[in-house]
Amino acid sequence: MNLTDRVVVITGGAGGIGAALARRFAAEGAAAVVLADLDAHATAAVAESVGPVARGVAVDAADEGQVRDLVADTERRYGRIDLFCANAGVATGSGIDAPDADWDRAWRVNVLAHVYAARAVLPGMLARGGGHLMHTCSAAGVLTAVGDAPYTATKHAAVGLAEWLAITYRDQGIRVSALCPQGVDTPMLADGLATGHLAARVIAASGPVLTGDQVADAAVAGLAEERFLILPHPEVAGYALRRAEDPDGWQAGLRKLVRRLRAAGPPPA
Ligand SMILES: NC(=O)c1ccc[n+]([C@@H]2O[C@H](COP(=O)([O-])OP(=O)(O)OC[C@H]3O[C@@H](n4cnc5c(N)ncnc54)[C@H](O)[C@@H]3O)[C@@H](O)[C@H]2O)c1
Image (spheres, rainbow, N blue to C red):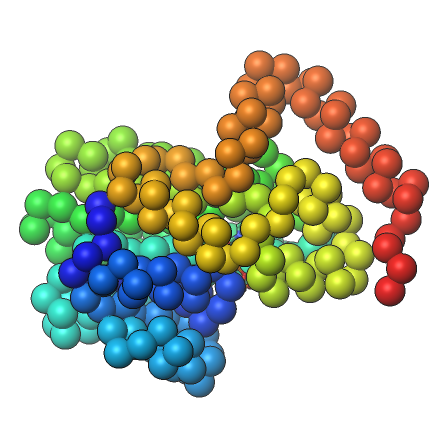
């Protein structure tokens, strides 16, 4: 897919990767870019900064009724949705003892929101004979996020769901991509780095921390090639290969990195 004249929806569009995608899609000549996020004012402000093709709306991506309304309203205004980016996501920074409320929120935003998006957008795409879903998952969904159990489990589920959708609908003209970055300089990671959280430090030690714009560049290239797995950090493919070929060796390497970071202690404030 190229973005010229496309109608695009991006959840989690009020900041970070979502806002960078919106800027890049507008620059590529998209006909409309609808940004959906929790905070109406923040979303409208980002839409304004993107330009006249962008529109900001307050939507909870984990609420199926709101997602259905978002899709129906966009199709009414612009006639279709060519690309739906299920990008909203949450980290917890917690291990297995994360409160059930955190597990539930991660499950609802990182996984169920992707189900709701697909349910809402597929009927129109199938009727028109084509469309593209891009789910922002994470390298955590093909590897692991040390220090964040709910994030790891739900991002793995998100990749599994995206793969299922890709296989099931490809022959009906639907393309599905899983965008799986490692570290990206957005509030999600910056907050963790600022507090010296182990999860953020492992990410920063595992590869370069990219800008949202670099992730948007990779997304546009991956969409153009209709690739399923879009890896803004190419080294993630090597890590995933090593994990598949030698899971015990891969885990041992990661545990060694964690021991080294723990021994070094958190960076000075
Ligand atoms: N930053 C990273 O290092 C990194 C790495 C890999 C994957 N990701 C993924 O990229 C995506 C975007 O994250 P980001 O890094 O831009 O972080 P971010 O925190 O800047 O942006 C996430 C956005 O999602 C929105 N959001 C959260 N819950 C929502 C809901 N229920 N409905 C609508 N919007 C909601 C937030 O308001 C926020 O604007 C997420 O899915 C995240 O898991 C981030």
